[in-house]
Structures are given as structure tokens and as C-alpha cells.
Length: 455
Image (cartoon, rainbow, N blue to C red; front, side, top):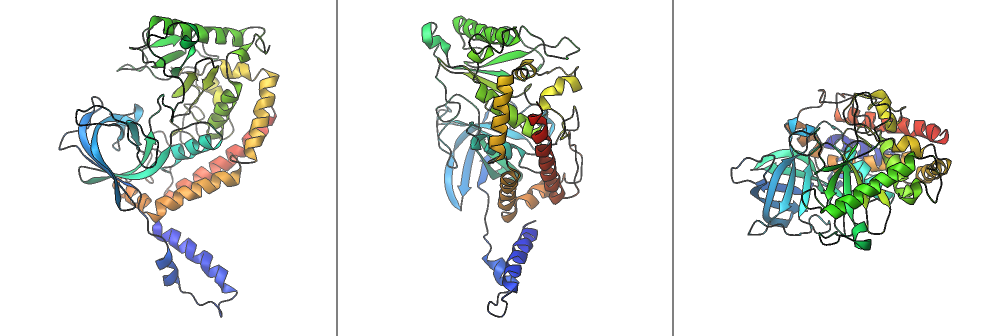
């Protein structure tokens, strides 16, 4: 792959010099020698012979080298993370920076704001390696926080383990999800109004379909089109289920109930007493567009985060977990470019995890649709333009190619040309995987241009 990229660059330069070759003598070898040689940041983890497991974190030593300079050398706690991805041989990890007493400490890594909790995401079924990086960058480009990301090479106990994405764990922090830190003693007045983080996601623990009053709020409204009596649950994330006090649980549950009642009610479009009194509509629109742009098959129903800051309305986001997006899922329309993501329930009404009624209802409000169309047109003229998105993809590929990361990753994990759940497309080369991704995005953008304007 690195040689292919060099040939492309060589061809570009040779064509440029062809018209004046008598005046400018340059050889292919000279061009190749001038191309930059780069390496991804190198993350090396030593577990001292212990196996990394899914809880609890085990002690390890981590070193990070960037541009041949050591940028971190210290103790960490590390564990396997993820749910369905745990079945893959290439594991992803959650890690915490530890002090000598094995307590978490905040550290700045790879230029990111300091924190103690980090993630090493392992693209495996996403053979492009870039889907999460692309959507997170796009989210930040439109002014919505998403995890900061950087490609790295990871080795464990001296053995190369592939290309990873070093990224921030989503959590309340002034440099991540920037909302008020709600203390246990804050149980009245404006102190009680924030900040809360909720998730629509799989249940915690061994049974991911199990929810209880201790861990989640149950919506009073079932999902549209569902055929198996499914419910919608809002999991407590911050404060955690074991930490949130009864007054705070009552407040945020009541807020969610009032919002849903207003959205479901006859006067839902009224700006004074309808749903808009309770939500930040602009955040809902941006969240909608990011999920629809990528046709995220998990969108709106899993890995869906909501925040409620002090004295503020309910916000959607940040986005999370788009490895099955951009045409990488072969079920429930996940590979299609011409379907609405928010209509998942009508395609898969028996799936346990359904989409709340919110989005169908919001699109029945002419004022919401006007704002949605205007935002789409604004973004299509800038960061959502075909050219801007393709340029991002090309930049990722250049980084991965010049560092030999693509070749080395797929030598370690030879999945090119093989089906890995739930691939909608299986290319016979990395180039084919990228061509499919680009073609899929261009087709999706074209469909959305018409579909959004017809709302």
C-alpha cells in the first residue's frame, strides 16, 4: 500500500514536469527518496505476563512513543471493553492511568486534554479502519463534541497487535462532556437541575436486556411499530446508578416524563407549552443528521447519549460507536443508502432495542423541519460537502499508508476478502474497501439531499 501511494505521488510529479522536461530533470528515485517516512504513535503495553480480562482492570505498564520520542511511560489499569466486539480476536481496551497506589490520575496523552480514562478502539469488522474517526471528526467540525481520536500502533507484551484508535472515553469533564458536576448533597432548587448524563443502550451487567428501577428510567411510551412489547429505557450514567440519590432520580425521571408528554400531546408544536420548552432542538437536529448521514444501524437506539446541564434543556449527544455505520451492516437496512435510519422500527419491529417515538413526532412539526432543512443545506455547503468528506478520507489513508500501518495491520489480522460480521460488503483489497466507502457516502449524500428537502 505504501508503494502504491508512492507511485501515485510519483505520477503526479512526473505529469507536472512533462511539459518542461528539458528544463527540469527529475527521476522517479529522487521523488521516492523525498517522500516522508512516518510512523504512527507506538503504544506498548506490558502486562507482566497477566491476561487482560473483561473486568477487573489489571495492572500494566504503558509506554507511548511519538516521532521517536517517549511521551509517556507509566502505570495503567487495563481491561477488555465492548459487547459484541468481544467476540473478535482483535480486542479493544479501556485503560486508566494509575499512580503508585493504583489510583486514577489525570494525564495529557498525545496532545489531548488531561484525564485518567482512555480507550484503545480496535477496528476489525470495519476494514476501512476509519469509520469512527471520520464521524467523530465531522461531529467536532460542526461544533458538537465527540471523542478526540488518533491512529496508533499497539503492541502487547512485545507482540504487534494492529492499528488502533486512541480515543477519549465519554464522561463528564470540562474538556469532554462539559456539564456541571452534580454532588450527592445537591437535592433542591437549581442545584438539582443538572448535570445528568443518560444513555439509551443495552442493559448493564451480564444480561444486556435486563433493566431495573435502580439502573434506568422506563419511558411511558412504547416505540412506534414495535411488535414484541418492547420498552425504551434511559440508563443512569452520571451520576452513576449506585451514586444518584432519590431526589435526583425523581427530578430527571420527571423531566423525561414531562418532555415526552409534551412531545406526545396535542399541543406539541406550541413553542410555549410544547416539546421545545424541554429540549435543545439544534442538538437534536445535529444528532439526527450525523446518524442519517452515516445510516448508523445502531443510531437513536443504542450508544445514544443525552445530557441535561444545570438550568439547561435536554441535549442529544455526544455521538458514539459508528463502526457499523456507512454501509457496514447487512441487516435492517444498515447497508442501504436510500432508507431513513430513524425508521429502523418499521424494518425490524421485533428487534429488542427500538428507537423512541421522538423522531417521527419531531418531523411532524413544520418548524422543526424548517430548521432541519436549513441546517442540512448549511452543512452541505461546508463540512458535509462531498469534497470535504472525501478529503478527510484521503488524509486518513495517507497517514495510514505512509506509515505502513495498513499493510502491517492486515498481515496481523488477515480479514481482507473475508466476511466478518456484519459486513454488507467484502472487498478483495483495502483499496476496494475504501472505494466502497466513498461510493456509499456519495450515494447517501445524493439520496439525503432529495429526501430531506421532501420532508
